[in-house]
Length: 217
Image 1: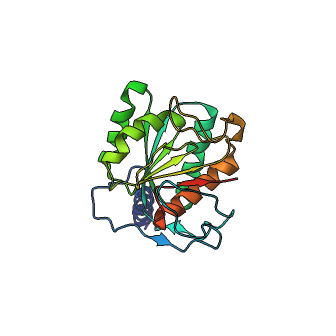
Image 2: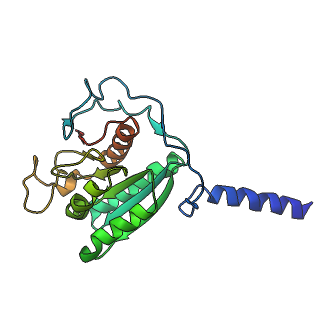
Image 3: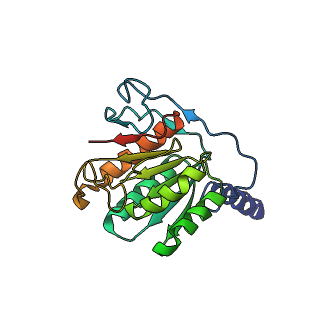
C-alpha cells in the first residue's frame, strides 16, 4: 500500500513538473487562444500599426492564456529595473499556469545569438525584459514575422506587426541615439506597473492587437 501511495505521489509530482520551465516543447501543441475578452476601454477602435493606446486600467483583467501557453522570457542585465520586470513575468506565469523558459543574455556581443536561441524554442510568445535588448530586437524581429514578441518597459522605434510593447511614462526607451516620448525614470519601474504591463501586453497579443504600444499610467 505504501509503495502504491509513493508511486501515485511520484506521478503527481511528475505531472506538476510538466507544467514548469523544464517542459518538453517538442510535442504537439494547439494554437494558443485567449480565454476571455477585453473589457470596455481597452481601445475604442482597432489601432493602426505602430499606434500608441492608453487602455483603461483593468480592461485587460478578463483575458488569460490557455493553460500550457509557451513563453520564453528573454532578459539582459541585473539592474533593479530589469529584475522587477523579470519577477512580474515569473509571477504571472505561475499564476496563469504558463509554461515558461528563460534565456538570459549576459554579453552585449551575443544579444542577437540569445534572441535566436529563444526563437529556436518555438514559443507562443517571446517576452523581452530589459531595455538593453531593444537594438538587437530591432535587427531580428522583422525577419521572424510569425513569432510574436512582447517588449516590457521599452519599445521599438518602428515595430513590425509581430512586436507589441507595454510601458509607461519613464519607461519608453526606443534604442541608442533615439529620443523618447518621456524621460527615463528608474523609480517608475514598480512591481505594480510591471505586473500590469505583463497582463495588458499579453492580453493584447492574445486578442490579436499587435504591433502597437500599450502605454499605462
